[in-house]
Image (cartoon, rainbow, N blue to C red; front, side, top):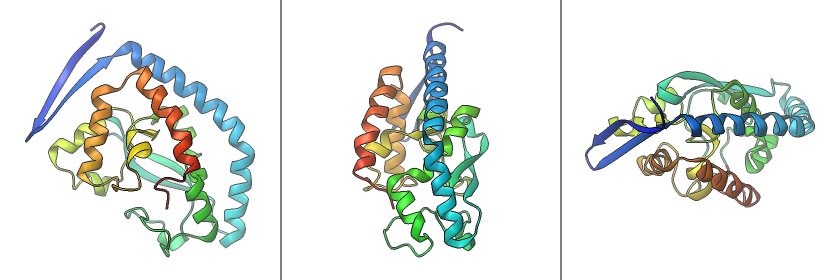
Length: 213
């Protein structure tokens, strides 16, 4: 198979998604992921170290949090994050959606607001489980509630940032079907230029702490 060819078309109700398999794009995406992932991890090392120490001093618990997520084509993988919740609250449950969620620790509030807790996912990017840009990976119990058409979001590799994060993260929870429709728009239009645009637009969203709880 050469060039860009339609692999499959999913049609459910009024939802239609064409997935285009472009080997050139995938090679460029992987090169971009490795470059950004490795360089960012080296630059972020002091921040990660300081954050890990702060988490440990706060409650003497492990700074690292891992959890099973659903990746590309439905494959399961373990995501890495800095722990922002109390140890007893580190279970499979919907993420906090308000600023006063009792599960979140004092240092965790700051880490979530600044998205520093997401930095360990650079390891997932280097491993190939995730990309820099793509739909956010969900927990298996959430995916188990999906309607059939929502699984189309798994046609692309999950990402640290994506169209949902920079557009409606605060207004629409990730598990909501309307958020899936935004992810499907990315699935339809994914390209090197699209990824670059989303990546650059992520930084203003971070400074605004858009939708981070």
